[in-house]
Amino acid sequence: MNTAASGVPDQYFSDFPASLRYWRGKRGYSQLRLSTDSGISQRHISFLESGRSQPSRELILKLGMVLDIPLRQRNVMLLAAGYAPAYQERKLSDPEMQAVKQALDFMLAQQAPYPALVVDRLWNLVMCNEPAGAMVRWLLDMPPHAPIPRDGSVNVLKLMLDPNAMRQHIANWEEVCADQLLWIQREAMGDGPGSEASALLAELLAYPGIGMATQAPNLDRRALPFLPVMLRKDGVALNLFTTITTLGTPHDVTVHELRLEAFFPADEASAAWFKARHQGGGPAV
Image 1 (cartoon, one colour):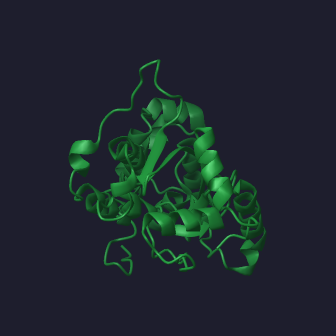
Image 2 (cartoon, helix red, strand yellow):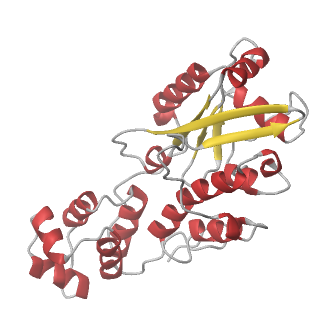
């Protein structure tokens, strides 16, 4: 089992049968249903899960598609079975990723004067447009032109849920907290115990008040059709909501895990505030 620089194992399953049993159970599949959907005999699936049969590389990839397993975890399953990873994991700065970077730059620029940012699967900041950078600086009392690190060293979830960071300015932070934790909980469940995602989830849950704040979403018919994010600072009241965009049909682990979060004003006053602050719609920073 490999160990990441943080000291946390970057994969949890040491053998293929354990990983297949985990993902079949996680997706709620019986062996019969998996057999029907994959075209693989139930007997063979049973043998795979017991370790009596060795899977081929093609079979693992097929099961990964049927069970909708994240690309990173499909690579883990391949490694556990003794095969090389099928999906590359490249940096966004690599030449092969130039087209992806340009597409993200375009989407970030189009979102101005409203904030937008790009994060990885653990919500580490990768890119953001200038309105997002300005909003972060304002909320954290940073100098107007202070650089916003985009090397993965800034975790957006930590910024939002830390009581000494942005959380103090989020009026409905309990609701936002419950919604944000769902994202990292899904990653932790997918990676399994001992993973980097599980360690991040534990760190977030250790923040004061977070454990008590998690709650079911408001399903009252009169509730808003989106989760509002209500910011309050220096007499300014901003009412926002966000959307999450992923890139379709990626064949690269990095691209598969990127998410673009766009902030939209929920009322005219909030829209006017962002428009007044925006200057020229600069490039992503």
